[in-house]
Image (cartoon, rainbow, N blue to C red):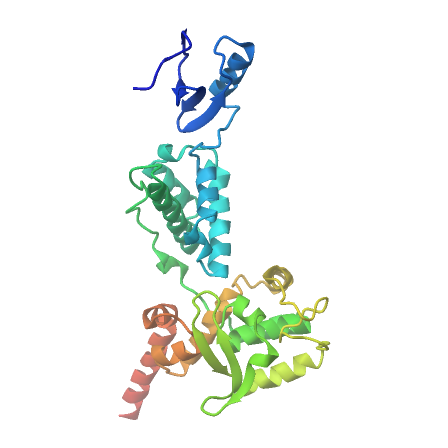
Length: 344
């Protein structure tokens, strides 16, 4: 049992003796060293600050400190670059709501409330829930809590967030008002089926004429590490030639040019912001990520199997491809069925 006396003085609540040589304040995991004279004005000034919660100890087991511990861990350092950025973003959102809350006070109902706060975007809500669980599992690893209160909290149904492809009319409308670089990004996303970050990472040195696949580009997807070779369609080759003739490519290492620093990759925000303004102008609510699924939908329209589509998009499973292309695939099969009836 911790001592409640020090040099003949009875200690006030939450004050304890450590190693018989100094005093510390300990409440809800908040550990703060106090002056060693319990009768001094300095001691009581510090003690009062601690009671009011105005002093945070270095060992405070808050969500904020848990996040710092996690960011410094090998687990976080081993994450892929894009994944770590996404985790930081989700953790930032979480900390806006509970940075100073003691980890041991986080309840299952709190976690459900956070999930529900983003229910209008089921995929984002589910990712936030997953990151919250990663944090709480790490708190278990540190011994801060005996179990993860978020374990078993169900994800939201993502079916309501079915991806919808860009239409030909929307693509034409975008090109009519877009600058050459924005048009180029749009075409690269649609025709290669890659994520925006991977499109911005495409370099001229990766372009080659493959013996089997033809003229195209080698891509290592940053999110998954998947390596794919994507042939350039005739449409994309024509668009690239036309658009690149309108863009100053001198000294550019990347296909999507950074005009200010030709040797550096463009930041996503440098493309997302102007392209969002263009989408708003023509009334398109679909996202740039929907362009990736537009590619998959176009391939599905031609009756290609999910496994064949995966060879372009680099999706990790045919199940995911089937989910995104389900409506398109159903229509293609329905058309074939009626064509068979008409031919009979």
